[in-house]
Length: 475
Length: 97
Ligand SMILES: [Zn+2]
Image (cartoon, rainbow over all chains, first blue to last red; front, side, top):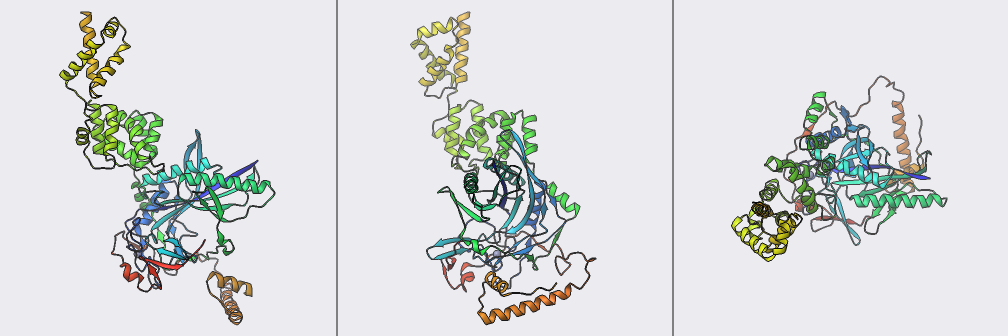
């Protein structure tokens, strides 16, 4: 039985203010070549200056992932000709990367899984090419943006495991605060190495599928490559070692054409960047700057807030969501109510575009206002949902929007009583039935009053009126 | 260790370096490269078993820059010497992977 063996190389852009070797802005997008200077545009004679923050962020990510930090680390030139890299080499790290070892731990189908990391190194991103007819247009805004490359050991064996690994890795990286890890903007990208072999046999020849930028593309390309290699091997063929691409629109992978131009990177030490060293105190300081990670938060949510373990997992999967929960609770909202509302309503809106990036378009004070309006009975559950959608992605005040949309429910007991009395006189037989002990009719009356009041009567008050009715009847 | 460079090696290096040699030039280059490697052979006679590996010829370490934004160069200035440009981008012959 053929079994796949999979390893990943994950590229993650660091969210420093500037690029790795120059003071140009590190910012997504922008008009072509507007965040550039002679250094990041590869002009001859320029000298790079290493960004201290990028080094720190790479080490912080490494510490959060359980890596050992090399106390002496250096940079190397990886030579290749391609116009997205104007110097004709990428300044990267070869034999002494910042971080070695480490692991990512997660669960797949209820089973614990551990993927070992081989290394994490700090390098520069390349520019962007837009192919247009017989020409290619080159934009170096992204060129020189600091990037960590996280290399795993070949510890995965299915698409499901790869996606679970990436999900957890993305979550950890976001918690450390070193990256936005937005797959849609390309700040997290994944290369997948895959080979097939009989159980127990030595590993087969592997292929590398490059630049996958969504979990869906990763899952589909892995499934595609497993199928393709299985077919090749079962029909007596040989898997070629090659670099491949995956076309997510068509759902097919293909070999890149530059096969005969097999890369020979001729790494050599970068003479323009001095090595970096760390003392124990440096490492301690960087470790102390790691924000509270997912594990401790899950513990805090289950033990201190009393949330179910599943809820704690869902709410901590993305740091921004967990931060939102903490902030709303800090503003005085009930933990359980807030976590339920975030899980059922906020996450639904935050993930509607089907991407794995969570886009929270509401801030804590306004979410807290909606939840407290609901808790005070000023709006009912349905109205709270509608109100959240109404203010989502805007900076409107929830209370104002609730008034405009006529969502505030009536707490005016006199007005509700009038509607209530009308419902009673319209339903004499049900009233008699109810008063003779059929408490199931309670819901019916609440529903009738709500309908008559256009959905805006506070059900709590209606229930109180029913209680009073029963009490008076018994007298 | 004596290592001579053959014509095939010259062709491979020329391709990686995006250089083109005609027959005479390639033969000259083969000679130059062989001679250079001979110079390096002299290093093999030195006993370096006690010398720690060197990452850089200077002993300086931790030459770092603060993460502070500085003005970038204007797009017009950057593209001034580009043989071809359009809409703020450099234009090169189409590259295919
Ligand atoms: Zn620059």
